[in-house]
Image 1 (cartoon, one colour):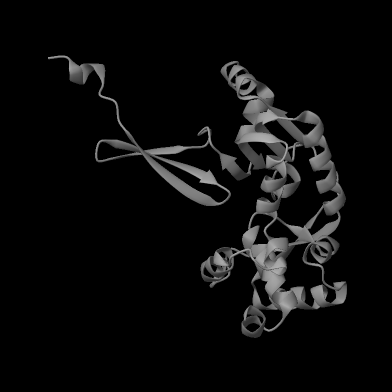
Image 2: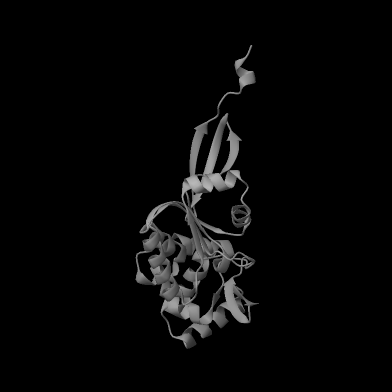
Amino acid sequence: MFEQLFGSKTRVKLLSLFYNNPDRPFYVREITRKIDEQINSVRRELQNLLNIGIVRSVSQSNRLYYEVNAKYKFHKELQSIFQRIPAKSKEIKQTKEEDHIFKGLQKAGNVRMAFLTGAFVRGSHQQIDIFIIGDMNKSQLAKIVGDMEKEMNRELNYAAMTIEDFDYRRNLNDRFLTDILDENKIILVDKIGVFAKTTPKDNKDQTETTIVGVTAKAEVQAEASADDKSL
């Protein structure tokens, strides 16, 4: 159905790749591997998308990258379409990189918080690409990241720590932790509320936690202050 609507299978895969990874630039050969299409077909469709204005090209580290153009006039509409397509078909599954990475990390233990930065995010100068908090099996995690490196044909640097270690280093204002938390990032999961936003509403605190691009809202009854209790 989508091939008929958008003109070709390659174009559908490209649009899904870009709109499901909006903060992530890709180079041509990387795109070719991810969507499993011939490079000539990929180049032709990329040029079409460039001409329309859906994607833009950027030069980085002597390599030409392509990323979604957030200024395209129908950007939000197209993003809404492609982010809502169920990942049932192999073609769409291939393009949902964040989901794929998160599912892989889960095989190594109980992931409480994780995000992508560094090579996964345009404008990031961070050396670390994947940051994880949880109870992880170190050898299993190393194997999973190694498999990702082979699949992506690039070296990936990661850091993993327990919640106890994270809390301890955060209380010390650890420089490494402060820097990486302040970096541009793509949050995969945040079960411990590190990046939670709190806004008052009807005497309640509404906490929003982003999990793999989906916002989950939990309302927590606000506590009365000591001043309110005293008369």
